[in-house]
Image 1 (spheres, rainbow, N blue to C red):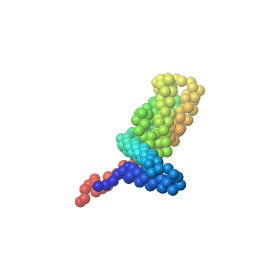
Image 2: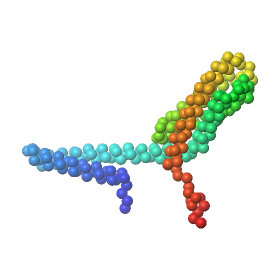
Image 3: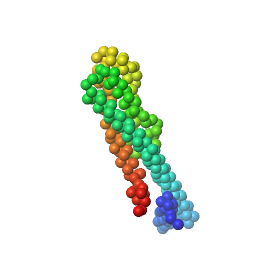
Image 4: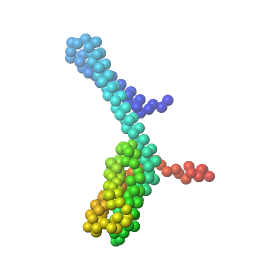
Length: 216
């Protein structure tokens, strides 16, 4: 029968507790006039403390493994959505930086459309991803927040026609804000997506050709 890692830890704590208690008890007995039962009590107390610590450690390790497994499961489900969000934010940033016709309704509609696509992942859905490395979930959430801010600004402007009718100074004010936010979002998205993809590649192996096509 295969012994689990958790069982090994508990057994190890029991052995360590017994050995440690026995060593202390032997030393105590040789240097003290205490009775055998006092020594035995000390042995049992030390063993109980070590076992309790071992059980707590096992539970903590098991919980960490469970959370990481859950994070990988959710990451697998969100992989395509996160990739689409990253692309949308990158397109919005490129439009804001390189477009020369920023006064047109078509430009405004494009920014709004790409900002909408960049917030397609609910931030609450990122909560299980907290165990992923390098603050991946936090960075994704922050980037989504920047794109959401662009959407809020755009909603205040209203329609593409109103954007065209807006004074150039007011449009420039919005554009400066949006360029900063879109640039920050694009940077955060790219770094977080890289870490997200690397973690997923380690945890979720792509099927081999033999698994896909069979052993022919």
